[in-house]
Length: 167
Image 1 (cartoon, rainbow, N blue to C red):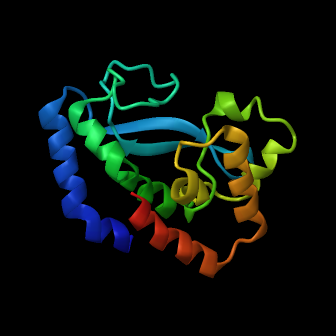
Image 2: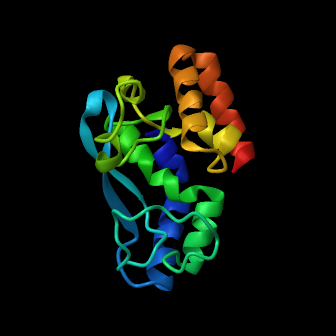
């Protein structure tokens, strides 16, 4: 709640900029899978054109035509993730943890991959500070499993501090 209050001016400015630079809503809602496989609606700032398929694969490069000009900056700075503080306030997410996955991807998990769902998903995690999106899925999953096995307040604090430097 404190984070939302402190960041309110930035959040309002981003909302205004999104609405001023591209048609459509400023916020983007998407179904994701949370702890124990429970679905929830994750909120982010919209970085792609309003007519982009919400279930399509996320953009992997800077030249993706679905991403708006302002959306590129939001993605580069990870500011597009800040509305997820609302999901944290609602108890659907944590500040730190494995990233929440789309239902169709989680439905295809093998049993060993389902272990990611034993904790609340997070806004940031080891993927974001160590690999970002540069690593193959299996290596990123290893970061999630390391985090799950070694969760602590000190590890969370370290990840949060390093997230600021990584983005």
